[in-house]
Length: 178
Image 1 (cartoon, rainbow, N blue to C red):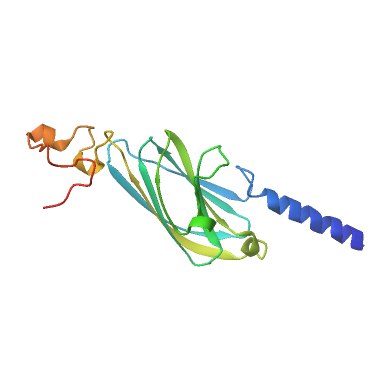
Image 2: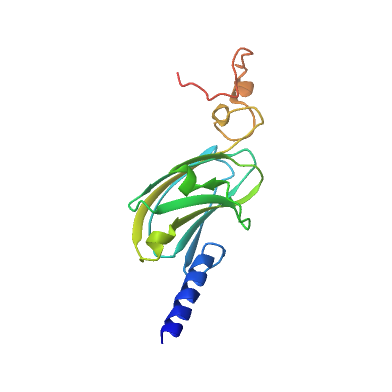
């Protein structure tokens, strides 16, 4: 009997360790956040609950140079998130090491996943956590130009349209409001 219990325990440890390595698990939920092609900045606020070994994934299609910001507020101190390219196990942001705030410049065009999870210590006790994730994408319109200089999102610096460009202004910095 003890041997059967030991085998069952070893099997559960092995299978629970594999949970974080798999992409499409039965205990995972996958959501797609649709980014607009027109907007220079787009934001979402996600409120959800996670329990045990469940994984939640929020997928966004992003262009190279966009800035992705995530501010994460969990009710359980063992609740974290990672950011990774879809289909690539190497995270660009690792929440347990870096905390609850991420700001990344996207390296390549493609789908990116914000993966929310409970650390193993909380997951194995089947704990749950309510969380809020404030997600913002600031799109890069022109290389070297901050997106705030292209309010209509057409890829042309707004000052060029109205003839107000000034060579003393650094257009790579955010536009100051008057």
